[in-house]
Image (cartoon, rainbow, N blue to C red; front, side):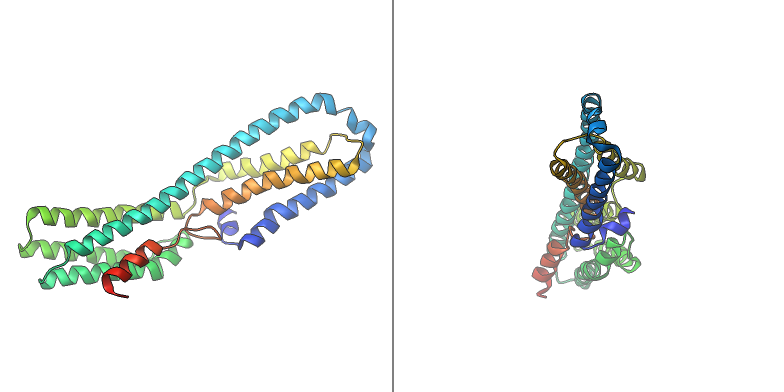
Length: 259
């Protein structure tokens, strides 16, 4: 479900998750009020009010916990991209040299960044890994090993080269891990069921002013479902209307290759 919802345009996501459920809640509110009448519903206010407060607190805690969790993971994805770009930039400088192996390392790094931007990112948006990009990373390691075998670089320099390649790989693995979604299915079930039950519970209160009660039901529904929209948008950091773009990698590639 989250995979499908996360790739929708923002307006479609809001329409499906916020507008439609809120309209259904208002329809049920009208039906319940006409079926039971204000006088019978009013009897629930005193006792059910305490229960509704408890339900609201429990669901609010769950919603806030998940929002904070997905935001932290989203930020982790941004940090991973920044670290990958920094490692690539440093590696370009360490690969600078007159040896053919150095030129090969420089070319393989540029090829890896190009494939990551053009093919790796779209594949990651679908929660998958691009095999061609993986092969380019393998070739980058082989190029680093070939430069090491020339013996033209000091041990300290080559240690930095391999450290930056490792940093590049680690940042990439973090990206791939985060791209598949952050929220387990059991929490999605709790979130949607909790929102539905909280709104459903609110229908059985009575207010003499029917329009005011409809307005309160609409506000409650919009607030709860808006929280779900935030979670859905952040759950897949590399796809959907709110996503992390490869701008940092594009900048490094443009600066180091002139294009």
